[in-house]
Length: 174
Image 1 (cartoon, rainbow, N blue to C red):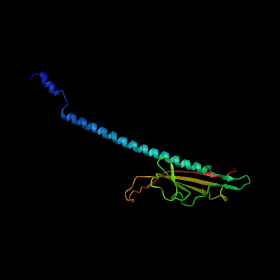
Image 2 (cartoon, rainbow, N blue to C red; image 1 turned 180 degrees about the vertical axis):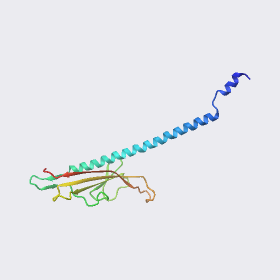
Image 3 (cartoon, rainbow, N blue to C red; image 1 turned 135 degrees about the horizontal axis):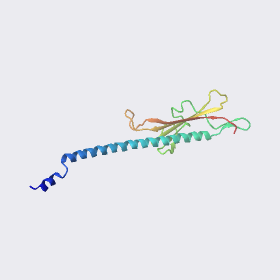
Image 4 (cartoon, rainbow, N blue to C red; image 1 turned 120 degrees about the vertical axis):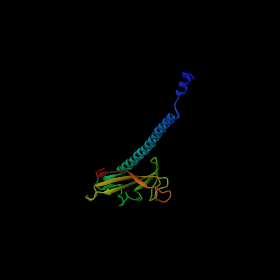
């Protein structure tokens, strides 16, 4: 046998080298795939937080836009009705609404529609120290519907608080 034919047989990769290279490539691809899943979850969390904060700020601005001050003769103007106790922890009529995944309004009432993704609750509370109330505290809480949970009835998904905003408003002449 000539020297050239021996070198030709040794010039390629062995099966072991190919298997090691494939194992390394598979490991790298799995790591990249896992990174993509983590990035997708982080992106969804960021989107949810942004929508939730926007919904809370929107309701706070709606409440702040309502008339609440004094008329020219000194009589109070009150378009802000005080909320019942527990309006932030439960669905109180007139102090809750339900929104879809994009933040569109889909209803109100004591129980959320099946396709509601966000629950927005708010409270209007008078300052305890003033009579008549000269300051009100406005609070808004937004909850997001999560994934179906183990131990809950079939199809039920738990609500998780995502945003809580509050501000105070003082009465002043209009």
